[in-house]
Image 1 (tube, rainbow, N blue to C red):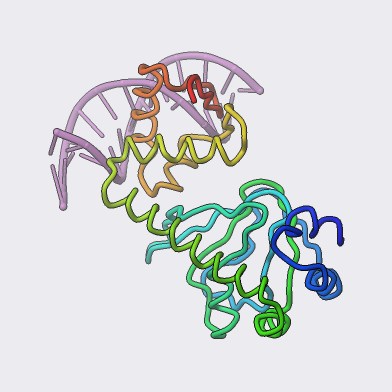
Image 2: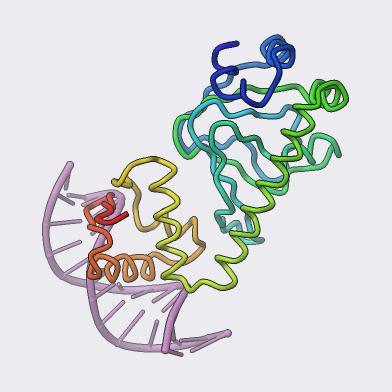
Length: 210
DNA sequence: TCATTAACACGGG
DNA sequence: CCCGTGTTAATGA
């Protein structure tokens, strides 16, 4: 376990902290599409990502999802931080984008470390900062970009996240993440294909340019 | 004008 | 047959 933490966090945390993490942390593996946190859940432990990726979604009153951002290795969930400390219900939904490994840290420890380790404090602040930036990015995208640009951005983000030019996804799943209808996604994807940006196959989208 | 909804045909697994 | 895809027509914001 020490190795897993070290390989992803040694540049952030001092040795003593890494040792403490390995003492109290619990390794958790989740499969693609597993729901880690749902809206209304109380969160009692905080996740540190070791591998894989998690997508964070916001939900409207009718239960429609909207993609906010992704978490990757070395990230943690800022929502969890505020939920844990404030004992609030979760405002977001977290779903595994691919098979993912996490270390779960009990809330009491993370409070303790905040005063004990400077590197931990920095990490927490830095996480907040990064998540806020990504949130602004998501807002920009929704407010200022038209759906076709949003779609392209979505595909590019996903491509970089998976580090793969071939995305295995259906038009309906994209429509769910962007909170729009499949008809539109199909039409826009078709036009992207005409522009030679992507190639469409059943259940698959292949990037032709980067 | 552009998105959404419903409906339909096509085709691969 | 079922599901994903591509398209159209009607309707709405």
